[in-house]
Every structure is written in C-alpha cells, then in structure tokens.
Image (tube, rainbow, N blue to C red; front, side):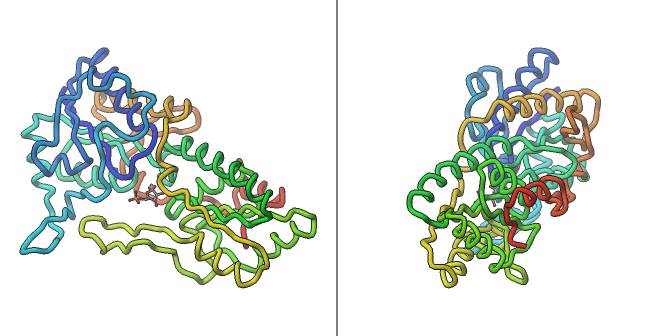
Length: 361
Ligand code: F6P
C-alpha cells in the first residue's frame, strides 16, 4: 500500500503529530509506504512537490507547530488559479490532480484538513480517487466530530492572552477588546472567554446590541470594577449589522473564501462614542495558530493518525476519523460538510450567562 499524505487549509498545532503517527504505525506495523504531498492540493497539481515520507522524515516533529508538508488554503484543484494572458483565472484542474496521483503510484490519499480540504477530498473521491481524511482546525467548526485537533492549543493560547490582558486592563482602568479567530463559529471565543474570565463574550451565533454591552460595563463600574474584558469573535456582528471583512471571496482567484477581520475595531469605535473610558483593541491573529501542540492535541492527533490507517486497511475510503465521546470512529467525509455552530441555548452559554457574563443580547 502506497499512500499520499497532504495537509490543507490553514495550519494548526497537531498536524505534525498526525503525520508522524501515520508514518510510524504505517511503516512499523502495517508495512505501508508514504509520499509527502507538499503545500496541500498544490502538490497534486504542480510538479516536483512530492517526496518519500519516511520514518527519518518524521523524526523529532511531535512537539512542533505547523506542518512539515506545508499547506495552502488557496489550492483547490476544482478552482485552481492560473495565469492566462497576463491575468489570473480559475480552472478546473482536478483531472490533472488525479493523473498526478496515478503518476506517483498512489493507492490512496490521506487528506488532513478542515472543511475546505475535506470537501475537496470528497469531490476527488467522486471522481475516483481513493481518499480518507482527518479533521483539523482551531475553529472546531466541523460537524461529524466532537472536536478537531488544533482547537485545544489555540484555546490555551487565547486563554493565556486574556489572562495577560487582565492585569494591564486593571492597572489602566481600560476596556480591553480582544479579537479572536474562529470564522463563523464562536467555539474558540466562547471557551477561551469563559476560561480567561472575560466579562463580555460576543460570538457569531448571538448578534449583539451595543446597549447591552454598555450596560454590563457600566454595571461593573458601579461595583468599582473600572476595567472590562470583551472577547469578540472575528465573525461576531451587531444585530442587523455586517461581518467585518479583510478580503472578499473573489479578491484572489482560487481562494473561494472570505477573510474575516476587524470585528474588534468596529466594536471599539462604536463603544468609544458612548462611554467615557479608554478602549484598546488586541487582535490575536495568527498567534492563535502557532506554537507547540498541547498534550491533548498531540494525543487526539496521534489517535486520528493511527485510526485513519484502520480506515485504509478496512477499505473505508470516503471516510474520516472523528471523536465521538471518548472514542475515535469513522464517519463519512460528507458529514464534515455540514456546518457546526455554538448552540446559543446550550449548556455552556446558559451557565456563562448564569455567572453574569454578557453575550450582548
Ligand atoms: O480556519 C482557521 C482560521 O485561522 C480562521 O479562524 C481564520 O478566519 C482563518 O483561518 C484565517 O485564514 P488566513 O490564514 O488565510 O488568514
């Protein structure tokens, strides 16, 4: 069995532990061979982006963030950006990807990625490529699994950042707005907001009203708490408002997704007109995707990497690994295409509200 391995989409801590466990178990226990495909699906479209992924190639990578294979969140073989006549156009190069897989002698492909990567995997499967997947993302927004790896590390990073903002907020009597990634899902902001003790948590699933946030900040002032921490998800919007966007979906060919950013500034500007307090905005940005994976992420990633080989061995092409309760199971790749969002009436939101945290609603 000769398998290609690629990591696609935004990187996150845990990708290297998956690659390592795939190769170690695959070589030692099952006698498989692996080919590393570089820069996500780009490595299946372009020449010279593949190399033998041996045990030596994966030595020492367990604690490292990022991915030794490189990644791309622009390289979609079905909408591939190519230069024609001096301008960028999108072309369907999926046949070329399939041909490249044949050329590399692959019996199958292990795609490690988020919703974009896994939905491309699903489309390639429909065209005849044997594919299995492992779900990753700091956003934790993939359905079909209770948790993606990368999320736990990002949550710890954001929690620590909020802790650090607390002391300076308190010293200066400031409102600290901290903008957190997660795209259209509020899991990262909700969990780290609660873990970091934020006073206000704004998530995409609960549109906010300015007046409600101001009421919370004023109430704290009345109780001689002259600072406040507001955790705002990059996808959070005011009631009837718009997403804060850095870059439109069609800004760069081949991207196909909107880049979010600026929700913290939008909120701070709106608050500044209505409250006599200093406001500062911290955008955590890509710091949230870096660093060494936590023990929990290393374990989850390692379990996914070992389990995905069971899927290959058992011929479960078109499936991905998933965490269900305490077990790692196989679920159809199509499951990952459904959206997963925070339940605004769920337990965690209810308990947080019960503790006095404002969601701006
Ligand atoms: O999906 C992971 C993620 O980090 C999102 O939280 C964020 O919106 C996006 O990727 C940022 O993408 P890029 O690295 O392309 O700026």
